[in-house]
Every structure is written in C-alpha cells, then in structure tokens.
Length: 373
Image (tube, rainbow, N blue to C red; front, side, top):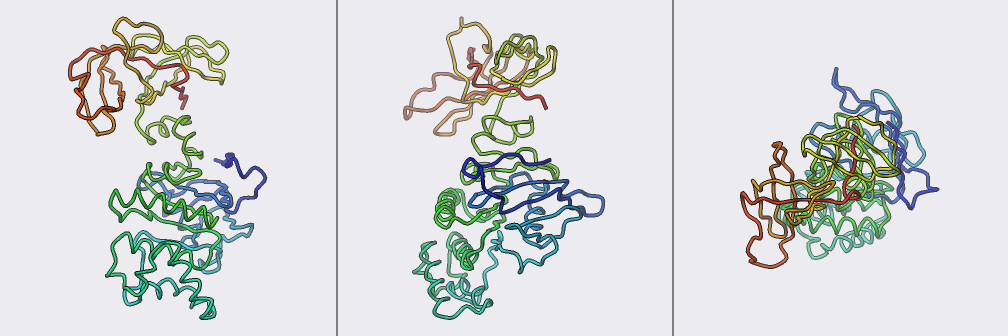
C-alpha cells in the first residue's frame, strides 16, 4: 500500500522519511508486510495500532535495530537500510527511559554530547538549553531515583533532543505516566516539537494520545497500514470498518444501496427496518452491500411522532454516566443496539431519560458515512 496523503503544509516538500515496500518476517510470521510510507519534515507523526500490529517493529527498523527482510528505508534522502543506528540522523526515546542511575540529570543529558566529543563549554550550554526546554533546571543535580515518573520522562526527552537530531523516534513515551500527567505531557510534547521543528515519530496504542498530538496518523493492522490521515479526517472519514471501530465509538448499520441521486444515497437496512439517507459523493451500485457509520454524538433525540430517513425508535437498555457526557444504548425492535451521547450541561440535573424509556432518534445525512470495506 502506498501512502498518497500529505500534510497540507508539505505540498512541495520532500519526505524526510521514505519507507518503500518494507517487509519484516520472523520465521513464517509477517511482522511488517509491504509497508510504504512518506513522513515530512516537521511532522508529529504517530504509528497507531493494537499490540502485535507491527508498529514497534517498523520503528525499530527506522532506528536501525532491525533490518528489513525486503524493501528500503531512506532518511533525509539517504538510503539507511543497512546502516547501524549510530550512523543515522535520528535519536530514540524508549518507554523505559533508560537513564543511567549513577549519573545526575545534567550528566545524563550530556552523555551523548560527551561521546561526540563536543567541547565542554558548548556542551554545558546545550545542557542548560535542554534543562530549560523541559523545565527541570532545579533538578539538574539529582539522580533518577530522586525524580518522579514525569520528571524522569522529561530527562529522557531532554537527552534525546540534546544532539539536535533531525528525527526523534518515541516508543510509547507516555506509557509509564498516570492519566492526568499523561494528558498534561501530551500538550507539552506538541509545544516542544513545534518550537524545535524536529520531526517526531511516535509509536502508541492509545488512540486519544495519537489524536491529541499528531499532525498525521498511520493506523496499522496485521503488519499493514490501514489508513494514513490527519486525526480529524481519520475520525470523520474512516476508509474501512476497522478504522471506524478503532477510532472512538461508532454505530455500524448494515444494508444495501437502493438509490443514488447526485451526492445522496439511500440504503435499505433490516437492522432498522427502514431507509437511511447518506451524503456520499462516490458512485455506488444498486443492491451493493454497504455499512452506514454514524458517531454517537451526531445522534439527536426527537419527539416520538417523528418520521423519515435516519429515524429509529427503541428502548433505552444501558446508561453510562461519564461526568461530562452520558452514553445511552438503545435497543431497536430488530435487536440491533444504537449508541448516542448527551452532554451533561447542568450539574446534578435530573436525568431526562432513564432505563426502559422509549425514545426516537435521528441524524442528518451529512452526519454519517458509508463504508464499503
């Protein structure tokens, strides 16, 4: 599969990372299977997927820790497929952070610069710059065991950035942090990346993390790339059933095409015992099996007598209160369940709907999409 998407600000740019038909096998197992991908300078790019999808293996091949079975890897125009890690114009930040326990924070940051024999005065200035960048100046003399998880994460990031790499690889960088600190650090990483202009490539299984930080995301499945897109497009316009289900919550309703006029498609579905109207510009064939996808937040509750396309009636079977929103599961006469959400605008307000209430739901034709694979 070839990546044909580009970030909007890279129309005339050359990719800083070019992966061409890369495959990696371990025995008979295809960890990465014929992946082609372009990543552009200054991107915050995420490789997203569940465990075993191949994202970490792909990152390790970029770093030089693994060699592709087939295919080539180019970094900044240079073929690095067979080069060792230390000859590649990148650095990597591991999930474990891998800090030297006997060294202070500033010595950890300076380690790579010492190995490159950078003059001491220049090295000290670079360390001060990195300490300020990640806001840990007051911890410069401490050792890793005297730091919190979030502080150790900042030290590891500063050490990775100290050599001013063109590309920084991050392997599950926030996995060791608690939820609140992880959310805070996501924005800090984005701000640092934008200030430095370095290309960040991050591996994560956390969809919210990828959606928050990334300029583009490559969603991986079984060693292949399922879709490459900006976070908003990946959420609003998934290209497959897998992509639709992986990113966020979604309702999937199966049916078949009965009519198409201009950019409007009508789909007959036994699951709702009626017609669905969808805005869809690509031509479809009558009787073609399709899936209509609609996000829970796009669905509205309407008066019971409402009728028409995209209108269903059912009974509330489950309610999940999440603080800012409540999630409702409605069972239709066919047994199909549909989810919708409502914002909890007023504190401690009485729930307007409860279990076993009958409700009528509807959504607009441009609020849903059609999946054909």
